[in-house]
Length: 503
Image (cartoon, rainbow, N blue to C red; front, side):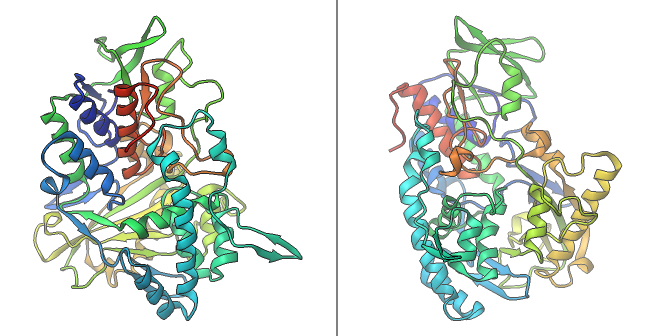
């Protein structure tokens, strides 16, 4: 196993239970991939995902690999409200967790009669897209005829008359404009895509499943931080006798007689194996395999050019006020300018970026602070991959972006600047350091339609015995999706090519 990310560990635990002897070689000094923690002066912060959706993925992992359930090992807390949204015009609305009726009522009250119903009707259509794509995109290996998934748009868009023509929304942005018909609802919709590094102007309408997943299955916090989930998965692997070797960089995958036969480490050590599972970015995998075609002919190509994430960690003096929402999303004042900056466009070369959409996480977890008179806050924004890596100019842009994020966050945390003890900025380079992905790029979840552009390469490869796991392979990025990829890889190895998916 190459890499100790969440997908790789999920596969390792399942394979060990099935009777395989599993060794994991991790380039860095710890497990978890992008799921890391930063600690200083009694403060602790998640530097990767801060919340969990689809906890059933990890419940299934623990059920299938031991007697102790997920809830026996970590405390899951349903976040309510799921999020408080602050829109460009100053309107703010807290949205209840996993309650369609509650969300409809909240939106009607904040945005005006009819707004909630339009969002509720959208969720009904999004559910239909989810039902049509859930199994082939999340629970089954990538279909050999994957192009079928790329051709079919599963979202049942509402007919829209424009310029004497009847059209249907083909992108997320068109859903917002034609079906939601409110800039604030459109911003709410598009923020789900942006958080995954997707441009709503080009993301297919099938991306409607992203807000639906959060609505249907809830938003969850892991007490002590999401890093605790990574710890629990690692400990489950160790109990199943998975061997971890940290500080061990794999420099090559051995191929003997047309089959993956093991790995070679930077110190020259060779570890032979019957199967090799790689949880690395595509460009890293390409360097590890020589003289063999890794991807099969005609298979969907690895994604490239995806954005990254900028994280600002804030250690604050003063207690967290009672009733503070765990998550607040402060929307950009100029959505189009932000999208141009992140994804490239007419405004991408502007001297100063638009104040971005910022997600503010305020867990209120005693385990993350030195005492009750302090608060740990995490700010995140989607940014261009490689931001800050262009010498002094890039460093200035990074600092400016981080300052803008703090300015935006003051709309969610009044008096923020006066409370700051210290700040730590985690740029895309930090993501690249732990994941190996160029520029700190983060993979998006697999989505149907768009010609297959948002599908990911299958977990099997053109080199027999070599499998891929994690966000850069099927079914794509995200904490839950990583766990699903581990289940798929384990199934393919244990049951062989006839494996038809999770049950």
